[in-house]
Image (cartoon, rainbow, N blue to C red; front, side, top):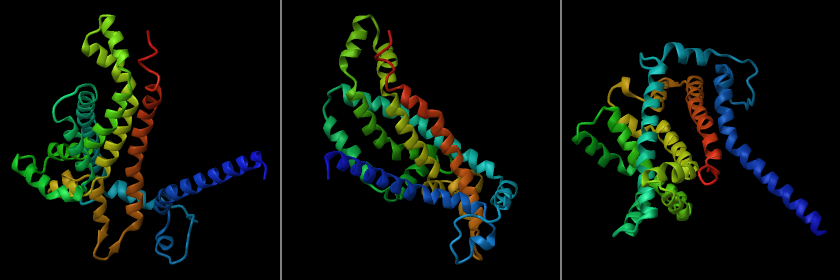
Length: 283
């Protein structure tokens, strides 16, 4: 086999592997969406039904009109949006400031602080449920969106600090020094030079924080005691009853729940691309 043929064969194998991984990742999403449009006899059949032969919007209509636990589905959507957006805004601000301090300054205990962040990130979130629950209740933030947002920030902050620290450290310090020579203050340098260059990392951490808070089930279930304060993942649990599981409604609700995540990603992904060349090339 010639070198050119081996190169082509390698590309074909690599592309085939990429397509297989893509199909493996996308198939659960496709099955969720397609099940939401299937009739009940196709959902509960023992045969494999890859496509809905008769599309129905009954599951979506029932979820949108009847709601869950005597509440509109939009109430749970709103609650999830409040928690997710609050987590993104607060967590991103703290992560950016912490990452900048760690990457740009040398202080006593810096290495230990990074190790603690890594250890906290390795701990399962379920293992922190009881301590966080007791802390939130003790400070009077139980059954409150603020308490749930603070909890989500605590869970996502270590990852955000670690990721943004890499982005900040990759920015040459000479760019900041050049801005200082031109008369810019530290805050001007931070916003006009450093912030545009670390924006891609900030977008990546924001996406991670948004998805984590949006899909959270355990903490939203235990920290909120009233159904009016539940988020979408908790609301979907109401379709599981003693008489069986309403898979059509669950898949329809899950499909509706996925749309805001996709919209959020589409809104911020442009910033991820434009931020790669912003800041250093202006002037």
